Amino acid sequence: MPGLISSNPSPIFISGTPDQTLKSESFNGTKGYLKPASPSSQLRMRPTRKSGPEKLPVDDSSLDNPDLGPFLLKLARDTISSGESPNKALDYAIRASKSFERSPVAQGLELAMSLHVVAAIYSSLGRLEEAIPVLERSIEVPNIGSGLDHALAKFSGYMQLGDTYSIMGQLEQSISCYESGLKIQSEALGESDPRVAETYRYLAEAHMQAMQFDEAENFCKKTLEIHRLHSEPASLEEAADRRLMALVCEAKGDYETALEQLVLASMVMIASGQDNEVATIDVGIGNIYLSLCRFEEAVFAYQKALTVFKSTRGENHSSVASIFVHLADLYYRTGKLRESKSYCENALRIYTKPSPGFTSEEIATGLTEIAAIYEAVNEPEEGLRLLQKAIKLLENKSAYRGTIAGLEAQMGVMFYMIGRFSEARNSFESAITKLRAGGERKSAFFGIVLNQMGLASVQLYKINEATKLFEEAREILEQECGPCHLDTLGVYSNLAATYDAMGRVEDAIEILEYILRVREEKLGTANPDVDDEKKRLTQLLREVGRSRNRKAKSLENLLGSNIQERKKEGTRRWSGFSFKP
Image 1 (cartoon, helix red, strand yellow):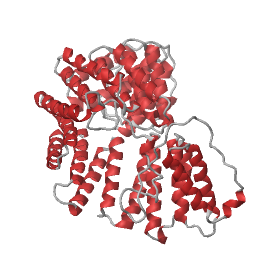
Image 2 (image 1 turned 135 degrees about the vertical axis):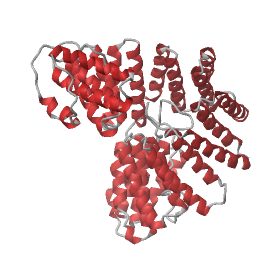
Image 3 (image 1 turned 180 degrees about the horizontal axis):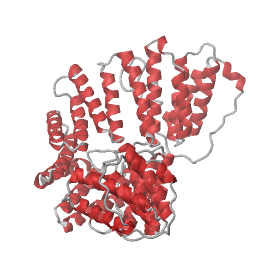
Image 4 (image 1 turned 180 degrees about the vertical axis):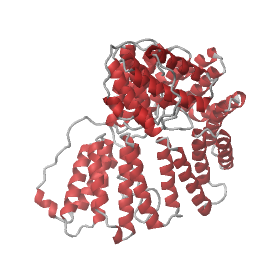
């Protein structure tokens, strides 16, 4: 299932938490993004009751006092630092912003700073939609022509806005904000400044999350170039860059290069005496060996990391459970199912009785990884149970709407496997609703989920619904993957089957002729898939008394918008050929 690629690959991908949204930088550009005098952007608040903001009595006319804004902003920061009610801190911060807006002597920087604090508190409360207009206003306030401080304040606003969109699952808007911030920062500081390298790295990670690996590799290379220019050879910064580059190469299937990058990073960490970091890299090395089917070397790398984590972090740490899952996956791939299930059970013992410090996100990730293994060993019922637990851990957190959609899609596949088609359709429908709301309606993953829901609808004899789903999936996958991609061809095939079932035989024949032509060109005439498509086409042609038309037709003619408008008479029937998952 698509998502972020990490050193611990899993079917669940979590884009971030509200506590991670705001990276800040001092106006003189020391490190990070925008960081006011007190850490207002990195909020760590205790959970509170869900009530409205605590309104404090105030005379609005007092907001005209030029000394009130700084005082209220300090109160907001102090409230955050003390762990008191975030609603009270929010009220202070909002009134500080209003005071700065009214004050004739306040500078734009002060207003921008207060707006950043307001947005940070909204994010910590999970009120992300309310944070967005505040951040958009904070971007408008600074005047780049007024100096470096204003430029970095605008840069910070863009980055914070990008983080907020990322948490909401709107990756395109997120990356757009990051790129706008990068442009301002590089113009203000110079393209080779070390702080620009950190933003390059940030963009590389964002493109990784969006599955845009070429763009991620490009930004990662730029980060490496700057760190080589400003850092000593074999620096910790370079090691971090190489680890990210390894993730990019792994995602692109270039495992040998990924392995080389990880080995170089490991050597730096060994020289620095950072055993835990070395162990983390060993896990990544084990993943690469596993992808290369070098199983003995993978086991050695995993066991080496496991020994370090047990001794430094304890027997019940999440990193120990994660390695158990990796070993379970490895033994499943090598056909040792008993050992695989044993490691799954060891991991579950840790996840079901988590030690202090475990987050619900870590547990949900682990349960999802184990569920995938149970699905693979043909125990989907157990996998479904674990996925339901994972969703329950995340369901009250709006920041993980996209993650929950992915889990629901995975559940839909499992329900479909065991013949529970109504539940499969409902799971896919719920996932699609969340993905639409999160702005993911044009992604390849969204197209794949639409196709899966269409298959479930076919099993429930909802042929009209299935046709609409296949048509929407076709449009998305044509745009995202191209008309010759295997996923797109699979949707074409399903669409042909539904057209056949609706009596639109000519439409079905045209699509099948195109599919067959493409498969013959890509796979050769002897391929089993080509033979299957040929049999399906021959069956339909026999029914209408025609022979195969080998004249090439453009895809626009075959699948243009007019095909949806053509109404053909005829009784509805079930297609004589199968659907493609």
